[in-house]
View: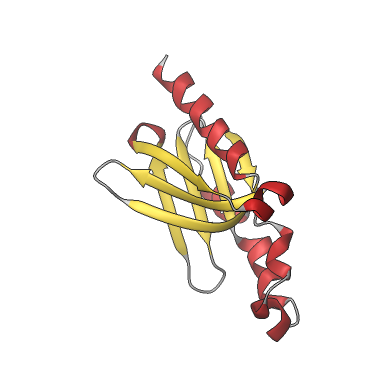
Length: 127
């Protein structure tokens, strides 16, 4: 786990699943122009976590974008994968919260597994 998640867990909260950016981000103009530095920073600093209480996502090193939403407030997590994404197991993910809040995240490794773990955690919370 990353520092952000470790520092923001509340009492009784446990990490259920953690995802990272996929290595395919190294195959881009952004990577080529920065000699792989920016995708490497993304890989090391971006955090996508499901706990037994929340979905926590942190993007960025210098400037941060965070999403922390209680499991009960997440309406859905949609996954968008192209054919290459399905073959290499990466895709884009959109978290939709109650009230219509939507946040999209790109090049996530195993986004279907992330969504499945969210659904299992949400069902366990409901029971």
